[in-house]
Amino acid sequence: MMRIGVIGVGEIGRALVEGLCNGVGDPPEVFLSPRGARTGAELAERFESVQVCADNQDVVDRSELVIIAVRRGDRQEALGGLRVGDDKIVVNVMAGVRNDDLRQSLTGGFPLVRAIPLPAVRERRAVTVTCPAHPVVDALFGQLGGALPVTDEETFDVFSALTGTLTAHLSYLVTLTEWAARNGVPAGDAEHYVRGLFQNVGRALGDESRSLQQLASDHETPKGNNERIRTTWFNEANAHELGKALDGLLADLR
Ligand SMILES: NC(=O)C1=CN([C@@H]2O[C@H](COP(=O)(O)OP(=O)(O)OC[C@H]3O[C@@H](n4cnc5c(N)ncnc54)[C@H](OP(=O)(O)O)[C@@H]3O)[C@@H](O)[C@H]2O)C=CC1
Image 1: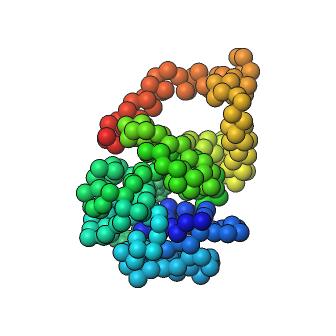
Image 2 (image 1 turned 135 degrees about the vertical axis):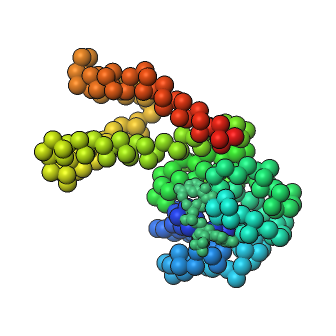
Image 3 (image 1 turned 90 degrees about the vertical axis):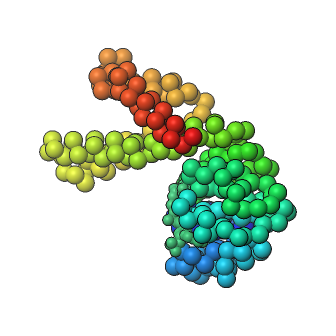
């Protein structure tokens, strides 16, 4: 097991550490940056293999693989002046920061891999897109739910855009429960029911022997209620608008 450093111990840094250590028999040694002090202290208290370092250079020096998980605007302050040996591996999880940009803040010829870990790495249930492929980094994310390496950042950006659709999906579920409440269903019952409905759909998604198209038609009776809502609400114009919103996001990511 390698020594892993995390610079930026916020929401995603914490999820990564929990995924690597929680309930793991032989967890890696993890070295945390001192900022995000409360989260760092809590993780160090919870997991014996985790410790908080004196500064960001100390994180780099003690680690074989360093994950950069600060907010994009904090990267100069967090990384400026850091010396990274060529024997280290650096993983860049900052949204919107290309590997070439990051190379300007960190000098050295070390391998640099971009990744999109999602909070479900905490439960080791997220597939993480990486760019470019690297055997050590892909094995690390393999332990956290799976790695999906891509060869170029153009493709990586398309996956990044897809991650921007999660809260729209959740807001869709909120809209459904609010509609039910407006029609006399107690709000708690509506939410409980909608959660159950879509948890079952989520489980069905795990069955990759059926295509998404196939799953959709398996859930639909010809001329039935699902077909009615799909064709009257999620019609071609609506699908086109979603595509346009994604195109706009992708253009900004590039
Ligand atoms: N949240 C998510 O689901 C995902 C986030 N990301 C990316 O990960 C990065 C972090 O996101 P997220 O965890 O949500 O953000 P948070 O704001 O939760 O965490 C950022 C952390 O960075 C710390 N920090 C700020 N400056 C420094 C510094 N100079 N040295 C060390 N640490 C510093 C902050 O400390 P302090 O609290 O003291 O300010 C904070 O703990 C972002 O670039 C984001 O794009 C990528 C994939 C998913």
